[in-house]
Image (tube, rainbow, N blue to C red; front, side, top):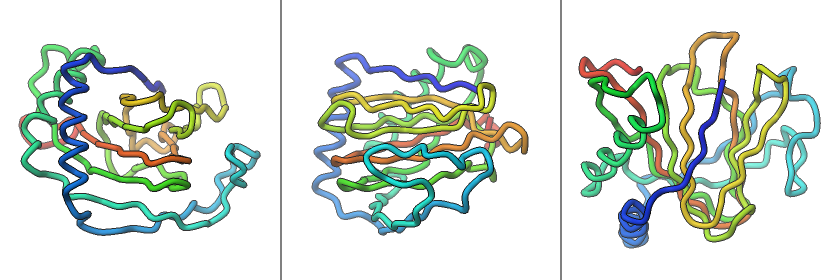
Length: 196
């Protein structure tokens, strides 16, 4: 199980900056409350930071925007380039990229522990925050039996990881932010439409 975290080059940052400005002119398609799931046996220790207790079911609003919009072709092409350059098993393979969502987390916003275990694919999240170290992506590393935290940098941070359906190899993760946080998700599909 691995998580790859990296930054973007300037021309990609320009595209994401333009997209973020565009989103500021749009209305979200819906709003959702997310709750922490019941405590998992391997997550029963104090693993929250920012004074958040473990598994406390505080609802935090997350704004969801349409999955596709006028930026869709440009963003999916960028995501495909990032997948090809960062995931060896996808290099020189014939695959497509689709968007999994555009999320806005307000300050103190969060999404509780979850696995996406109903799916099986490589996923990419491109996130934007205004301050370094004020939001994070946290996950359980089964190989080392530890909770790991990947803090967002200032500006854009990218993360690639694989979602598995295998019961013994689930990728359990969550998100928290103290500041405004945008998150753009993508997934890999093969040409027949099946997720990789």
